[in-house]
Amino acid sequence: MEKIKPDYIINLAALPLAVTAIKNSEEAYSSILDTTKNFFEIIRDNNFLKKYIHISSSMIYGDFIKTPNPENSSKEPKEIYGSLKLASEYIVKGYSKRFKINSVIIRPSAVYGPTDNNFRVVQKFIEDILNNKKIVVNNPKSNFLDFTYVKDLVEGIKLATLSETPDIEVFNLTRGEGRSLNELMKILENNLGKFNFEINEDNGIYPKRGSLDITKAKKMINYNPKFSLEEGVKDYLNFIQS
Image (tube, rainbow, N blue to C red):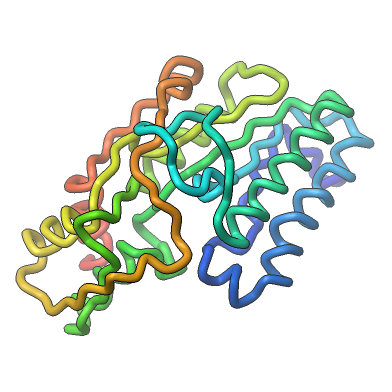
């Protein structure tokens, strides 16, 4: 970093999934917390950086209290991943305040799209269906997620990076729309035909979620997600099938 002297740092260098964080808690701790601390230990002693962008997670909220859930909602993570992500946000805020570093924290949700290789729900369902495997769905009618197409998220990250923002700012960057797993299954059926599935009544480690409030991002950085779940799945399938 001292050789390159970047104008911007976008920190995506962390273990990405709640389930993986439980199985690999030491790696989750080091990649989420130590990496963030290491960045700021370098940044604090230099003056080349215009802005630091930290990718957090909507899992920091735990159960969503409001619909849509705003950035200032209560934060009560229910598992290891959300807890570590929330702790990393405090590291960002502490260093940024102490050393006057312009920082933005971004909270995505249920990201899906081309080149995903982490077996998030949309990728896993699509690949299992294409391979004629039965999919397992947790509480499809009551399990809501704010599915966010990766192209929208990337555009939002770019806007947060290049727009004028206060010294420390936080944005939900999602579609801003809660959709059930049942709706996702119907969209996949419309695109891929009938498939085998099994319903699991256990929601496991995941909190009760839904839509996130993206009003602040719309107003402050002109964020305007373009892909509905229907459009995103279609674009993703075109990528996979090509």
